[in-house]
Amino acid sequence: MILHETYTLQDRFADNGLKRSVEAAHAKLQTYGGMTGWRELPAQSEELIQQIQQAAEQIRRQSTLLVVVGIGGSDLGCRAVSELMEHRLNGVKLAYLGGSLDAVSAKRTLALCQQHEVSTCIVSKSGGTMEPAVGTKLILDYLQQRYPNTWQSRVYAVTDGQKGKLRALCQKHGFVSFTVPENVGGRYSVLSPVGLLPLAAAGADIRALLKGAEKEQALCETLDWENNGALRYAYLRNLYLRAGRNVEMLCGFAPYTASLGLWWRQLFGESEGKNGLGIFPSTAVYTADLHSMGQFVQQSGGRLFETFLVPALDEEVLAVPAFEDGNDYLDGTELSALCRIASHATADAHNDGGVPVITLEPKDFSEEGIGELIQFFLNACAISALTLGVEPFDQPGVEAYKKNIRDMLAE
Ligand code: PA5
Image (cartoon, rainbow, N blue to C red; front, side):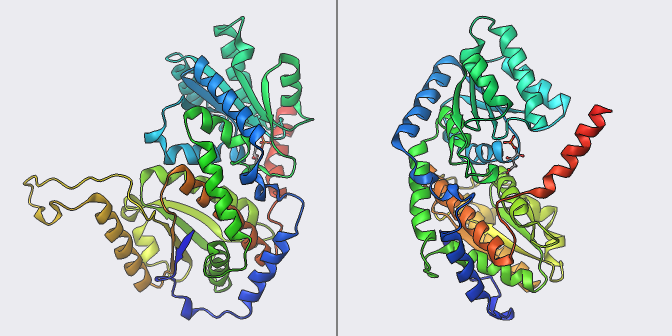
């Protein structure tokens, strides 16, 4: 992953031993054990990849729509990756259930089902989360009514290997199922069957995704400050945080980066936001959000920094036509060139306002490029959290609201 420091204003912030702390965090991660199974996911077994491909082919034979049931770490990764390449995917269409408690959204998804042949992929590591439990009931009830004799063959599940209600349901009805590795937490699991199965069904090349991730993982294991962008990203984030900049905005420059922003937000928010520490992760899509958030950012007065996401290669070529509307200065300019100019102009302006801008440059949003980007963020997040002194792989604060809901339902 290429990380540019042209706009980072790094010389204004004091290191105070931070580089050594990041190196110590990196070393700690290499032998951390526990929930770091995501480091091995890019090199997972050929046998598993083939099983996923077979299930994906079966889904494509049976259906034109796959309803993914899941929430948080169980659906955001799939949403992020599929949205980045939606215009190139030629497999089943993806729809979502169980990511909210909203009846309108659920009814919309069920109405969409009526226009398609349908299968479902239910993803829940614990197998007991309330929102996907509601989604599971809705979709299984729907499938049972629509395909009374064959509904079980349209259900795919990804859950714990041994325990949980979803595992029990798989055993009872004989659903095709995959396992979320025990040592991989939800928000780190997109390159396990959690993301790979629905993405393969949608037509993504999951081998290329894993290949990109494997290349990045090899880089991230080195202490090479030149080429290991994860080290530098973790360093800059902590540098800014120590100087009081506790809000980060991840800014893509295309509408289809929005879900990636939400995946990134969960990854960093849930990994770092503990004990009153951590950077508040926020996300925007430029240039649209320059017209809504640009004012705040420009005059944010030392509270935040931005991370721009700008792929090196342009996927599409489209020149502005010379239609006579008085804006002749745009005629003949490539949109991609305009976009690049906009990113530099914005970084310049925000720098003038004292806002540091880190620029991440994945090679492109191909499967390989996305695989690199995912593995880059996972490593950077773990190193950054360990530098900060928090446990990157738990989420004790998520339990409180769940307990309240259970108590209120019981009443
Ligand atoms: O990252 C996490 O651990 C969470 O976001 C979980 O993925 C989310 O709460 C869903 O949990 P489960 O997969 O057990 O249904």
